[in-house]
Length: 138
Image (cartoon, rainbow, N blue to C red):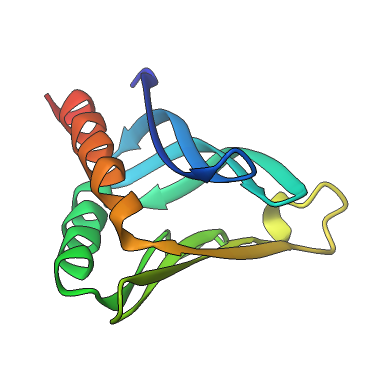
């Protein structure tokens, strides 16, 4: 499959954001995308973030968004990489990222970061993810 030129982003400020782009459906329920993230003075890019079940992730994230409760992860079973959304029940969301050893250039470490934002930023993100899923699956 070829990459879809769409972007889904949570932009809290110019220095706090998560952007997913260059989505590709690799077959069955496996996908990949590029991740760009910034947390205050720290920024990173992960060119090959693999994950499973994009439509299921969108449904679970929307359910947590509606109830303001739960934890929803975008990941695969075999990879160490993940983006996890933790809802606190009061409208706040903690986004945790863990890009594990399999993708660290020196092979011995991992990259972990998180940031907190208001759940209202997820509405546009969910719409963008829905458009991406539609483009990937027709």
